[in-house]
Length: 206
Image 1 (tube, rainbow, N blue to C red):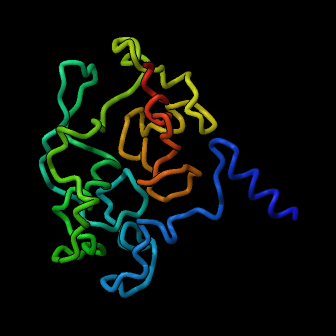
Image 2 (image 1 turned 135 degrees about the vertical axis):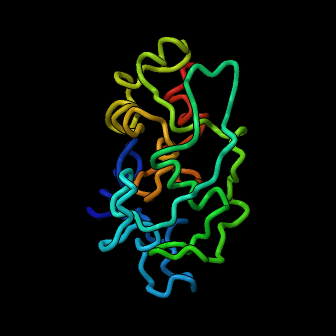
């Protein structure tokens, strides 16, 4: 009975990490795919040996990095300075842009297993939320409709800057939890529920 009570409490508390959730059995678990003969869960992205030392944005990186040039989001109402995806967002796009095979890891570059059409964003990001831009107090002030990330809570335990940004930049991982460790309802590995646009309203003051 005590164990059941604990599980229920962990489920209902906002921002609580549920230890039973992880990359295992999530959309990023490729351990059972035929093109991954090792059967390892982490190996498609990370390796303990012979990692790509040119990648400093993720530990012990093991996957081919996209070289695509992207069409990025642009708007007259956007106050942030945007450019090509960098950092962890570029690593996400190294599968999700559809130009690099999922099985291009461990030095392999001739893989044939591409991401499914439903998960492929492509190289035209003009209709996607901008990424890899600095989101700080100055941007919040100039925009007028964004919360100050250095002082406003993310709802996940600390500030927006601490919980959601990477080096003060908004990246794919600001909204999506690649390792599926956050207790969020819904789909697409969101870091928190977007019911009633709750995730959007974490940053946007509307």
